[in-house]
Length: 91
Image 1 (cartoon, rainbow, N blue to C red):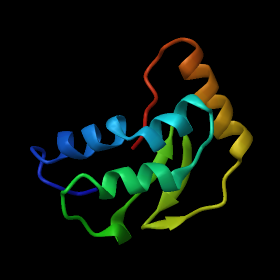
Image 2: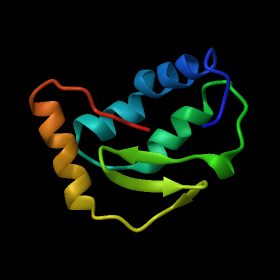
Image 3: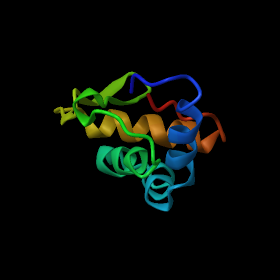
């Protein structure tokens, strides 16, 4: 999302506060829809055609469109990060 830097924390808080996004992450379910929806709930206006969702190195959505991806790799990334109480990088 190409926004003013001051708006980005509000989008991030919306994602990390979302029960649906958290259940996807801690359930090791690479559900891009839950993450995208949480960004949309942030109250920050953005062009959904510019939305990208990436978990680690796995690109799940680009230009607002879902992409084919290896769900096992994305799920393994979430499982690894959650098992270490590490940071899950969502871009």
